[in-house]
Length: 386
Ligand code: HEM
Image 1 (cartoon, rainbow, N blue to C red):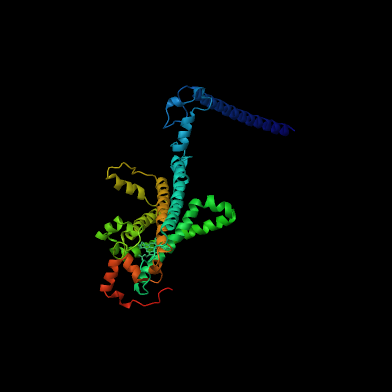
Image 2: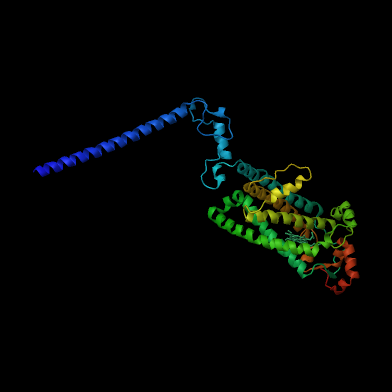
């Protein structure tokens, strides 16, 4: 009995010790919390000492009375757009920028002037070609077809041309879909069909680009010599290439001045398209614009040479679209004159042989050269068209 009493007395004492320990801990925590709250309240209340240090805004930008926090609206949006250093704990400090002003500007340019003026340029070109066709009609072989032909482009030349041409047309169609599809095809085709088409188009665009680049290189090697300027070019240009008058066209070698312009636009425009396309295909790997601006600044310009990787991408996209739209307009003119616009022209790239009278009217010096070289000896006779 005595034992039992002693045991329960011991248990009671241990229990009260534990209780007092818990009470002490709660007391300490409570005091700590009170001190903490007090301290924060003191900071909030202390005038002129903002808790968030804003690297961009003035200290005086704090809202009076802290009714809306201690950051003014202007400071708040500045931080959202430029990022507040120190607030991002992951390695990518760019993630601290919640709204990119450059991105806003880029989208405004892409969906604004580039798209709108681009559409006007393309529709305007179609309109001008239609007007030219209506006024001038098909440019005929004035002396009629002779029935004798002369080789104009061999197999390798035609291969290079059609490789470049077919890939360019595929790139143009799939590229135009990326820029205009959402506003034109999507409402007609519906979401599912448009999504499948655009996804496939994107792959076509990415891969066919390499065929286009290969075509450009071969065409450049084959034709660069014949596209160097010579004295006949000025006469040809002065007479408007004879496009607006009937009769004999100004003399020219293998390529006339108009064709040389097309050639160089295709080569230089194609190079620029390729470089900006590669920058888009392999994101954030190149700084073509910073490098180009550095060169241009030598001529007294004051272009920025420190561009963020994102800005490089934005400029690549805008430039790619602008050059592509311009080239599509130029190539529409080329396709017109190489097909329905001029009798006898398509044969040059179709069969590789042209009628002698066509050659005399459009490339008189070249025809002479071919004859002198004896290359025209194999000229075939064929029945003139009835
Ligand atoms: C259906 C589309 C096309 C047709 C019918 C066409 C037709 C022709 C023809 C007939 C010629 C030879 C002209 C001559 O005998 O002097 C030619 C030349 C040429 N083509 Fe095309 N072409 C087409 C598309 C393209 C495309 C897409 C490009 C480049 C992106 C291109 C670039 C060239 C170049 C650089 C030349 C040599 C310079 C010139 O004649 O203007 N062609 N084309």
